[in-house]
Length: 534
Image (cartoon, rainbow, N blue to C red; front, side, top):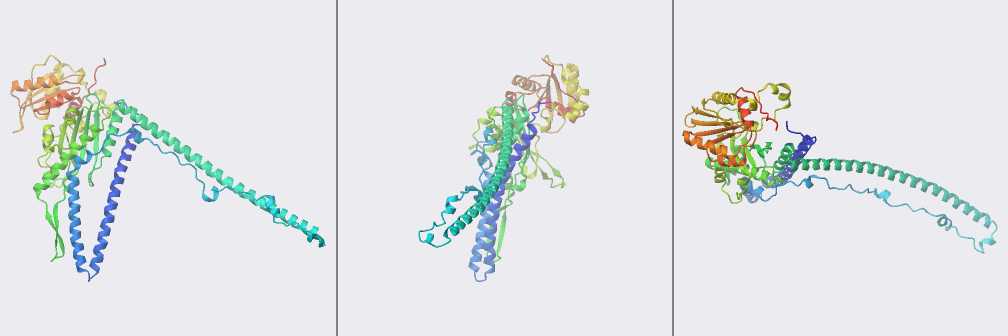
């Protein structure tokens, strides 16, 4: 079982949700703007129709409506035609620092009524309003009593004021203290959340850079989630990473053929007051859709390789599927329309800004549907579920993994019979030959299918290390000597990128340990691969 980091589930989910939310917010803003524009134009149209004296304006509005429809159509086709070019203007590398929280908690801001510090009125200000008796006042009997009374009244008013002021200040201080206490709690919670989130990002970055498969899968999931495609693109995918050959396998859901507008042009007919549609040619729909499929494939590979800041990828496999309905049966189907395996070095030599997509994919040895608009499927170069099947689910480990034979413990004769039995069950007429010196086995088989069938040479290598290009060259030489139509190399380990590069333009199929286990299980043979300890 691969080591699973404690943070992996949370950071993978959080990362994908954050990236998806960012993309959805962009699309929501775009939809809102378009809806507002359509509402504005609809309002203009209704006003024009309601005004019987504005026939000319109504005519112009209908022509403008037709022009707007054609502009929107042109915009849609332009978006679809520039899917690949769109990504070339962005750097798909994800900065881990951008995932961290850098915001500072805002300083406490008191309400306006609490901001100004109250200034008390002094005793002197109260008594300054009492005029001292003049010389004439002193001649009037009772002046001293009257003056003293004024002093006493002022003293009383000052004490009353002082009590009210102190109560006001006390109440104000209590409110400020409450606000300060709540502020401190919120800031403490914020600081803890920031520290936790940034610690998770640090762990994520360290795990990714150290080559943790879970972190690597999470990282490239974020890369693809952030990719901004036109509306109605599903952008659903699965990613698997095999560390030993540094292979990233992507299973990607393509948009269905309905993404291509069936209308080629809108035309306004004044005599009927109608906007008529000119149907797009079937051949044009086919070409446009095939171009979209090709562009999504090349773009996706480009994005993950451009984002490969820690050089974890040597080989990329892309399988593009579409969820659609079979017009002949009405049943849901999921055909593979494109499949390609390429090395990083080979792909980075391509200038995607100038490349012809069809020629580029042919050069990469891709399997591309000749009629994607008719859902004509191709065989995936590698099934997603074949990727590193040694890493089985926990339930398998707890139940019956130990009861399965370990292929690395079989004798050469037993391994020979296993390979022979496998291809017999697949439908080949397989006959074993003498075992080779390295513990592998040669099988000469005949594929009975017309046109596609013929003589097949199969070689199996019980290796624990990566299979290099020399083994593939040997297989190719055996094919030539035997006059075989095809060669199949099966190993219990993995292949290096040089092996894939040599085989890509030849009738050779490479099946690694995960693929071998997958084929065995699909044909009723349950096994495992446990390499001996050094």
